[in-house]
Image (cartoon, rainbow, N blue to C red; front, side, top):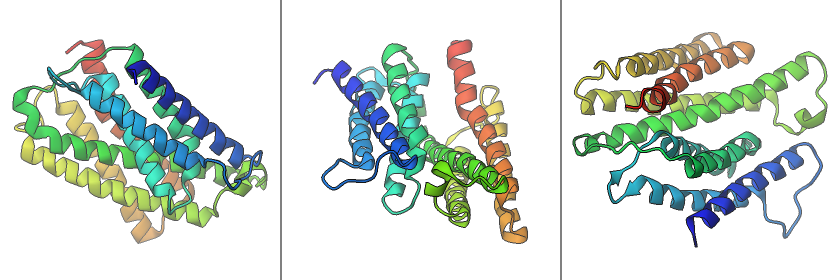
Length: 267
């Protein structure tokens, strides 16, 4: 099967799965026996996506970690983590945003070439990079959960719990899921920072200073949020605000710095 056909099929499946989830959430369709569930369609798309990533990243010239390949890899990880979580937890509605975005990432990777080969002397950083991406992916899902929680909270405060809000789990369940995601993401981010101290010779080198500082700021924000939840029972809008602030630092630390270094400065 050609690269073009695989890419087109994966993008189509991602968008179709996201569309089916949206129609289910809004009550326009209901689960029917014999019909392919959106989650299985999403898993099929991630399988095709994995094949594309393997072909695009592991090249004969070395590991290509260009910006759009990295973006595609992150979107794949986020989609996969979400789909695996959705098997046992009521988080599949986040796929309305996550799955189409993964499709967009494939399209960007296909149409916009990006080359950034990982030097031979940096191959030992693969563990650090992997942990960082897993942590980023989990906290990305938490940020989307926080946005959905914000919409749900707003509707309930305005006493307009109709529409798709009625299809969501109770507010307490949504908050519990949010903090489970943040807790796991925080542990993974802690491991990523520790691995950075171990594997990176100078994490405060000139080209890494902004990334390191922003990553630490994100870690501090999530640490304060988890402490506030444990000590003071933080919830609702406070939890949503802190989650989105922490995620903003995380986006700037990785994708923001990578975008500036590779696309803007051409390094």
